[in-house]
Length: 230
Ligand code: ADP
Ligand code: ADP
Image: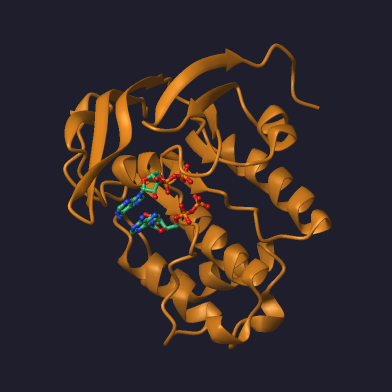
């Protein structure tokens, strides 16, 4: 199981000698297998929440619990798609995936690393670009590699920061569909925290939507989506 609990998360950034409160006492309980989207204007703290839950940034005060355990750093229970894709520039598309699969925890068979990397490249339609380096690919292609990497690791929790923002509409529809399929793959649904600017996308994908406001960043309201997915 994987529940996520944000307990009174505040984040203060020191900027030019003054303090900026990016998050103010953010509380959110995400149920096991739930898909939650964060929406809100630029600067309201969405990316900061992803960073804190991923364990890359410690909050100024408050804490995050995953399955009732405090987050103290990154872990293989969580997979993250960052806004900047975070691919290794000196590795090809294939090598980026293979490296992640090889270094993931769990009982993985070394003979399967290559095949798994190929399979996930294919799943996002990039098998022809297996030997391309990230800086020779478009933003959308890099984004798809970063998403494929997270899917290939099969974590319990998906943390996704505007993962489809650089995609054209056909690719976006394909990737949204793929996400919904992989979300429900296996015995247990993944728990998903998803940042988007696109309200339609949030309505399509989410169980609940958390609406944020800036200065300081807060969750104003959490709404339940009252209809079934197509
Ligand atoms: P978006 O608004 O699309 O979510 P931003 O441009 O706000 O993206 O942030 C992109 C990255 O830059 C994030 O990793 C964030 O942590 C960092 N960042 C944003 N604002 C600042 C700042 N004032 N100083 C340093 N880093 C920042
Ligand atoms: P969003 O993702 O909703 O656009 P962010 O989480 O990127 O918002 O940023 C929230 C606020 O914190 C913004 O005002 C941003 O400029 C500021 N911020 C983010 N990262 C940093 C940083 N590393 N240093 C200073 N300020 C930051």
